[in-house]
Length: 348
Image (tube, rainbow, N blue to C red; front, side, top):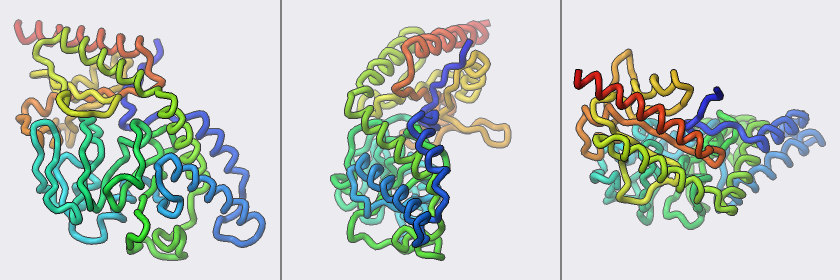
């Protein structure tokens, strides 16, 4: 039986459009910084991709700085000073900020000093969406990009990070989007590529795949495909809660991403759930992480006031437009069977 992949927030499978664009770009031999014909051909691929990605992001092409991924984009944005964030942020952001911003029980963050703060647009673990404050310095929009309508030009953030592989592009390429007039001091210095903001020869092949994925993601949004994903997510959550009285869905009281479900099931650690589902041919991820053989509670869930013993029992299921109802039904069935067996063991 074919495996079921329900971990799209970790990475989305490579889109065929992106694969084709990358293969085509492999035949472009020039360096985009060279002035001869071959170099100009590579430069044309690079700049067309920049325009397509900017269009999908609702930004100007001059705002796009290509990086090796969201982590580098985060590092570039947050190396410009000292910043604050909440403990719900991705590790790349939390590592660069003082994680002191308060979080309420729904996962919403208060930002008293936006100009010195970072706040994600969407949480990759719970799907909870934030209302970004005016003047915000940085937002990680990686999980939101491609899943919901957004336009960087209308966001109240000066900078933002995205990653290609979250939308079906290749791994290892991303971008920092910088609002016009915002100064950024380069951290990687050299030949002055990317308008002097990030030196190093651009990865034209990966960038071409990124652009193709961005165009496809925009097309999905325009066609309303994610509305169907919302229906699947709601079906999944209702079925799980009906099958297990001691299981809750995190963040249901506030706006969330259309594809993300975070389940907490008492006395069933997230990592164990992941392993058991994996043995049944289903890929999901835990709300907790495993370090040196020890399961530790999700700091995202704990920041929301959930006790550590329950936060260690988190499970994330993340869908995509290619997810089928039978995939969700298979997960619900196998998860419910395992949950029932866990209950019998505890009762015995």
